[in-house]
Amino acid sequence: MWLVERNGSSMSSTSAVQLDFSNYEVVKDQQGHILVDEQGNLACTDHNCRLKVSVEELTAAMIREGRADLTRIALLAFANEIVHVGVDEFDPSLIHSQWIGMYKNWGMPKHFQVPKPTFSREKVVEMANLPEPRVPLYVHPKLTLGMLNDLFAEMKGHWSLQQDSGVKDNYELSGWLFVEAVLEAPYCKTDQTQLEETFNSQGAKGLTLLAYFIFGRYCKSLHDRYPDLQTWGRTLGSSGHGRVLYAGFGSDGGPYVSSGFGPSGVDSVLGGRSAVVV
Image 1: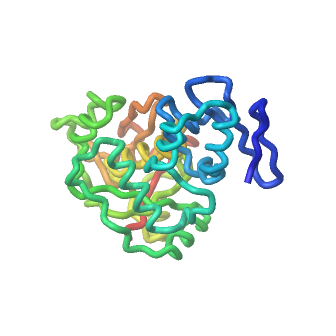
Image 2 (image 1 turned 30 degrees about the vertical axis):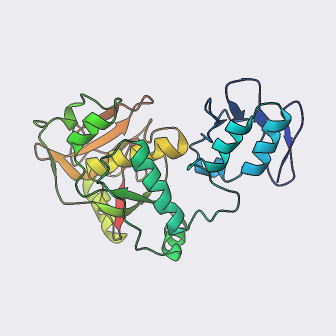
Image 3 (image 1 turned 90 degrees about the vertical axis):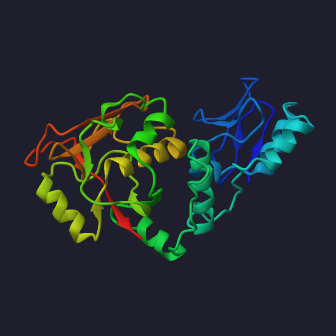
C-alpha cells in the first residue's frame, strides 16, 4: 500500500510510487508515466508499473486532490485496462487478456481472435527464469506484413511491407511464442551460423520479420519504447532476395530493415531474436 500527501509525494517502505498532480489534465508517476489520462482512464502501458498501483488508493488520492468526480471514478472502476495489485503476472489468463486488449488497441480485424494459451503458469515462469528470459508473444496465423502497413502509421510506406518487397519467410512462425524479453538485441558479435547453432541448442527458431514487428509493438505497449534502438537483430526466419534480413526500430516506431551484413557479418551491435514455439 502507499500513501499520498497533499504535495503529491508518496511514501512507503514497500513501494516507491509517487503521484504528480502538477498537470491538471493527467496524473503521472515519478517516471513520467501517465497513470490517468484526460478521460479518467488508467492509461500507463507499463505492466510492471501498474502492478505497483492500487486502483482504490489511486482513486482516493484523486478525490483528496479534487481531481475525481463520479464520472471519472466510474471510468476508473470499470476501465478494461485495470490491473489490480497482487495480480499474478505469470497467469496465462492474464496474459490472454493482455493480448486481447493489445490486438483491440492496435486495430486488428475483429475476426482475428486471440486463442487461450495452451501453456501453463509453470511454463511462463520457466521461460522468465532462463539465462535469457523470454516473454509470451501471439502472432495470428492470418496476419501479413502488408496488413501492418495499414495498421500502424509509423510503419506505413516502409519498403518491407510492400507487395513487391521481395521479402520471403523461410518457414512459418505464428501462434503463441516465447521471445527474448531484453529490449536491445541479444547474441551480438555472432555470425549467421553461430546464431543458428545457438537457437538450435535452445529449441528455438529465429524470428520472421512479421513476428519481429509484432514484438516491437508489444514492447511499445508494455514499455512505451520500441526494441533495438541501438542494435540490430537478425531475423533468420525471413530473407530478402535470398539473404537473411536484420532489423531494428527508430524511436518513433519506424522500422529499419536490411541484409547488408551478410551471413559472415559480425558486429558488436548485430545480434538476433528467436522464438520457442508452444
